Length: 445
Image (cartoon, rainbow, N blue to C red; front, top):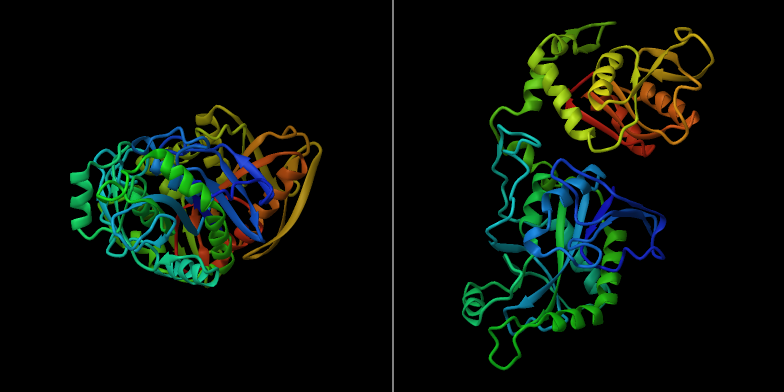
């Protein structure tokens, strides 16, 4: 479980985070709004992103929501809690009150609403994501209970209307939004919530009312100075609520994480790749369903699709060395290294490499084995990508990862075409905090 936090919550304070790192990343959709501050808050792993930049230099329309959510997805965040300042459209929601949102109305006009139907990801796929309840109910319950426990005034329900901005509403607009029974108004929740659902991440928002927008006849119309003053006065409460919620979140089953899988129309590239992989029963021994990628490699369109996905993912990550695991990892890794213009290093079975080597023994689904790497193959600190065709029990890649680290390499990620999740390999990598990427998965053994 890893928690993403979006917004100026104050939790990015290095004094609060343990084992903290600041990482600049890129995505297929460009750069996110800020570097990612990662670390642990009271033992829970978190990744913090400033929606409008660290100094609030990005106006709402220009926030790269797709890059923000994608960056958190690639960091393997399972949940996102967002904080937002908002204007109140109802008398009973006073400045300083918190609202645990459960609905939104989207009045934006210039923002990318989906990851799909885009050349970066899936040009031939449309995702009709269900969004009747756009915020994770389990995550909302956590926020409500924590607010109650901390005696923080928090309204249990609320509809936010998100406008384009950066200007505030006219009185006529504000009155119209109030007549629609919206509770609060902001410039940030949509399409952030939609993209989180498409990414399969549980998402909820803590909204803080800072003003009465411009509908209230007895109150001054909203100003930026007013918003900042109220937010700063309540910043400690926001921090306390998020810290409490982070401790209470459980990584339970939730429809937020799977809704996108049933929402795709069109034949995706990944479906096409999967269809080109042959299954051979009872090889190399009875009971094994062998997933054979030679048929994929023999299909020029399929091979190109695999390469395009790898290049989209790694072209911007400054990879210096591709490490291929014997033997199909040589085919894929060599092609990726050539396309990225970087070095290639093989990891081979024991006794296959001449010269000075180091070795690692590991267990795999058919017994035990040993792999080796040349001890001088990688320079200290070089950015490495490990590639193989398939991950099963994870023994081979764990051995490869340890070898690369021993000779000084910095493993950015390990990448595979096929995942066999029931054999536990990716779960093992996750438990060891080894970064990985897989394209398609097959059920069973």
